[in-house]
Image (cartoon, rainbow, N blue to C red; front, side):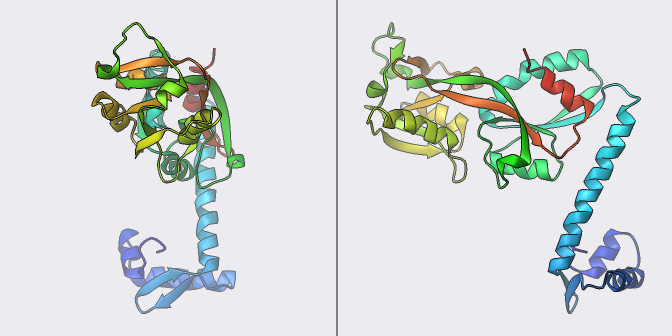
Length: 285
């Protein structure tokens, strides 16, 4: 009823008649001694007490399902579906891990979702996914204490420059001062700014102010803009494994060493499946 907003639609969704459902609702309110729904004609809206009950009920259902999974796994091998999420800048780290895992545990299939930190934080909370491969810090609507994190080896930043701008093919490095002369493309969304701030902190430490020509939430678009000669970008080195382009040259940054931290993130209060726990092992040395 909380989702449907009408008792008639809720009864239909539950495949039952409306009068029995109405009676059950009234009996529940009488037993609890609180009003769970505000009634406005045919429309129903959760009261504060009703919303808290809904949240607790969802949490209990999650705990029940996770307990069932835990008990079933006591006598079974690694199998089933493993649902994971990844930010696009970490996708290049997945294929090797998935291939190794699949060779060892062929009965497990994968469900993979890509999104930003806030989307994946919501998917974790709703139990749509178990693990996230993400840049750190993980930025979401929840406090960092809400999550457990397995840190992975950090990823050095490199400079991406249009091939047509490379007049000296033998030059393998560029300084931040040289890069500051070019128009800059930066990776940033309205809510996730960690990578953007890391890059600008490096420039700031040398009293440099690059000119931004684009703020973009997409790694693919940013690399495409570099390839088109729009500007340069500073991105983690592993990104180019997935987005290599003959029109983009990768240069080492000669006078600054800064890295992007990476980790596997999961809900601290959630029981992880055998599949999830073994999958994390694929990233350990």
